[in-house]
Length: 321
Image 1: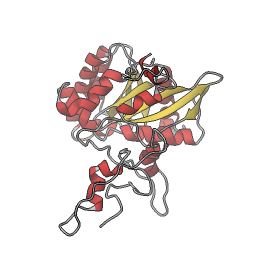
Image 2: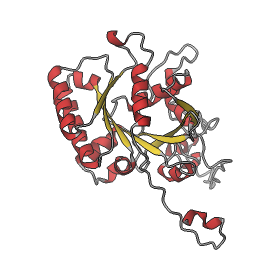
Image 3: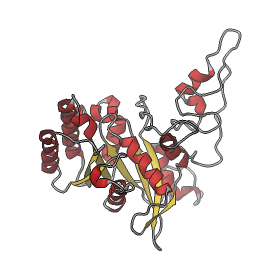
Image 4: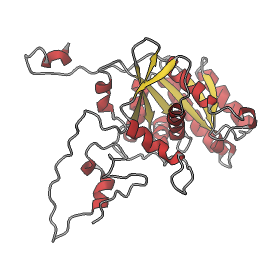
């Protein structure tokens, strides 16, 4: 019987579950890794693994947001885009650049409840022994999972810390959401449509410049239209990922034209892990300009749900106030 998880880049049981399950016995991949019971080895119910804290260090789920909201009303940033557009790479780049000490004007890193979650998506960028850096693994679209929320808190000089939750969701969800808002397999994207304070719409230059550029443009235009119906005046940024690649003028103008018609106040940014000739020596400034916009433009939108308590104890009734 194997005791190592089969999920690539997951090192359970030595570290928490890579997919964010607080009890790894509930993870389908972990169940497969440890094997199924046989006739000679009957199934023994497993005890849930206890946690010393109300968070595990991995990506948070939607049920964890009220915990974060205990300090401040969190700002949810929806990173929206097709599959393989570079959404997870964007998040990993932010984490690594902050780790190098890059600052955003007078904003300073204050804390994070999800350092394990950040490491799970960023570790592939690091040199490990003789293995060079690579891109993060594709975000799983397992049915029934909420978007993974990665937490960062920033502080401005003498002000209180402000909490942000960055959504790491699979592109398949957004494609389904663009086609059918109320589809059963679009629930995660729909949650972001309801709760995000701002959106980063990722335009994949690699896909738009490739042989299937017309299809990539059509999917992106569907997302623009869906987001336009859902945004309700929330800030939107159009992010050209992998911007070291050149998108044909006709396709680029078609995307920009629709985006500016639907979002007259939209902002545009270009990011790439491979700097173009114009960005040589920029040391990730494109990523940091985008992060500055993301944390300074929106206002918190998430509404903390009220807790129904049966107790008459004033302390335990606090959640009803």
